[in-house]
Image 1 (cartoon, one colour):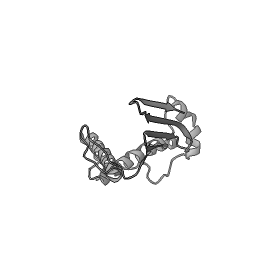
Image 2 (image 1 turned 60 degrees about the horizontal axis):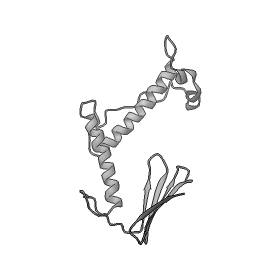
Image 3 (image 1 turned 180 degrees about the vertical axis):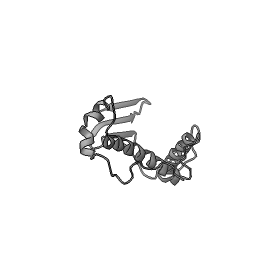
Image 4 (image 1 turned 90 degrees about the vertical axis):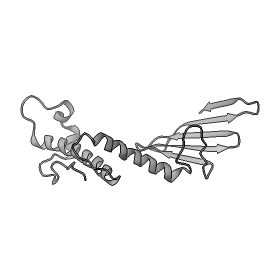
Length: 158
């Protein structure tokens, strides 16, 4: 169940995104007096679309998105389910507790971030190299950890 519905679902009296981007009442807040209905509707529409999307995620992961005190725990359960699903799809051992080992099927681990960007870690003989990329896939930084023959560890950043 998802009780979070979209306000002005038919998008009848709402300003365009282009106008909303530059509207002084959005940028500075509404002046004293009555707010314009098209601006107010756009604001409520955007907020309610986000609430509806989160409610849909909660529903998709077996919860009920309702106006109740349980909403916070429903959101947490949903996101934990997403993370657990990612881990179980990408890591061999999903029941890690304490000092255990993860076994990867390749010598490379890719981590993609929801906001964009990624990290790629490669395991070599005596080295671990992690490259960090921004959302445009530009290399930000390379970190190389070297396990030296004398037992010391060197870390270099480029």
